[in-house]
Length: 302
Image (cartoon, rainbow, N blue to C red; front, side, top):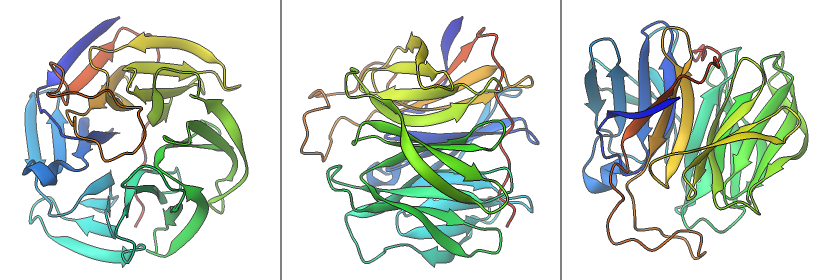
């Protein structure tokens, strides 16, 4: 196994990596980077080592590429489309834009091309957010509520299970999932981080059906078996790793985002007080040599 920095991007809040199998490139976001005058959207081509970025005047929770080109974005106040060539941003619909302390956070697309994104309380304390589903016809549907900070939406290889973490309720949930309708039901606790050194952030599922989660604060990658038991832990060089995604030609390389933010709005004491970020905090990492493959990420069908 080898752990390396592949892009020295110093993201304020790196999140949401998406490997696109068509372009063989990795996209990711800097969720609140614009607050520090940093780019919001990032792209890395491993073949050429070229890095591109785009700035957006909103906090960004997640992105997915669209089948017809461009991207769909979960921004602070709602869903938008984005054209990479013209940098044109168009509103699809606003989500709870009247509640100033909440914003859309992590999101991902299911294998029917629906885009799921959940909210987060910017103060990281109140269960006032929901999980939303954006269908290809641009209709929006509430999926769940009572969430503090939604992270890590992903699906089992057979599409029968949907996973979602609430970072500050310190749980990863598992739902029964109906791929035909996009409905999630029978919510229960899949894993808890209450006794861990870190809390659950972004996730992905490999081809064996094991869930990989990036643990914020502890700096660990945790691989959970389908029954919720911990199969392995991998310590990363920085404490605040934020999300994971398989990529590469064989989908056998694990990309990890991280954050350099040291000022936290939360009232809880989970974060260690820091004056400056750790060395390499905010960079994009890659783990190779795992002998494990991921699953291709679908594009948004709208």
